[in-house]
Length: 119
Ligand SMILES: *[C@@H]1O[C@H](CO)[C@@H](O)[C@H](O)[C@H]1NC(C)=O
Image (cartoon, rainbow, N blue to C red):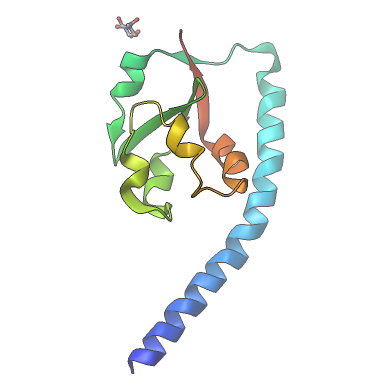
């Protein structure tokens, strides 16, 4: 009985990867379309105080290399769990480039880009 449940869970995870894989490739196009759209537009800027307001699980922004990302929709999917919240509303550059992250994470994060940090 337990084995069946475990097998079903594993299948679910596998299916999840199969569904997610093509979406990753597609989002690359979305990104390009967006950067085309933004060509004649300044990127939105936020200061640290504004970013700091979004420091919750249900409203989570992070800063990586002076760029601001709204990762709210990703918090629950993060394979590393709540570690992603350690620097919510704050600079996450160090954790982001930590050894636990494969390089594909560096591409993935661009889907969550919302603007630049005001200096
Ligand atoms: C950041 O922006 C907010 C809203 O525009 C403003 O009220 C605040 O004074 C700014 N803070 C700093 C440190 O510039």
